[in-house]
Image (cartoon, rainbow, N blue to C red):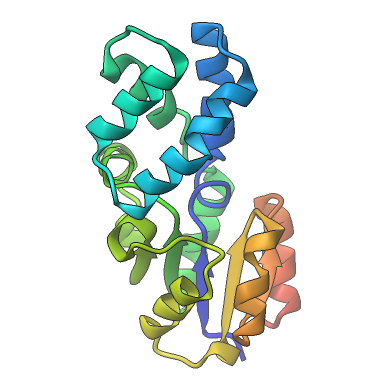
Length: 200
C-alpha cells in the first residue's frame, strides 16, 4: 500500500523551467538553443546544481560562454521566471496531503531558485521534507540521492511512489523498490496514482 508520494519539482509541480528558459534566453540574446542548453544543462549547470559553484560564478561563466555583456539579474530572471506552478498538480498535492499521504520532493535545484520560488509561490509548506541536489552534492539519476530521499520517509520503499517528468529519472527509484509514475499532466498523474491504489 502506497503511503508516501515523492515528486520531482521542475516539470511536475512547476513548469519545466529549464526548457522554457533555454527558449527565452535564446530568443532574447540571439543565441542558438543548443548553445544555451550546453551551459544550462551541461557541465557548468551541473556544477551549479551540485552546489560546487556560486550563483555569481555560474552566471559569470554563462555570460562568458555566450559572449554577453548584460546585467546578471536580467538574464538570471529569464530562468527564474520560467518556473510557474502547475495549478492541477498543486491542487493534487493538497488533496493527497489532506488524505493523509506523506509528501516529499526530490529535486535537482539551486538555492537562489528555491528562494525565488518559495518567496513567490510558497510551496515548501506543502511537503513534509525533501532533497535538493545543491544541498547534498548529488544529482539524479545517481541512486544515492534517491536513497537520501527514502531516508526522509516514514515508510519503506515498497510503500512509496516516485513521480518525475523525465522517464530516465524513474529507473533508479524502480530499482530501489519504489513504484514510479512518469508525469505528463495532472489528470494523468491522478489516474495513475489511483491505479496504484491511492484514494484521495
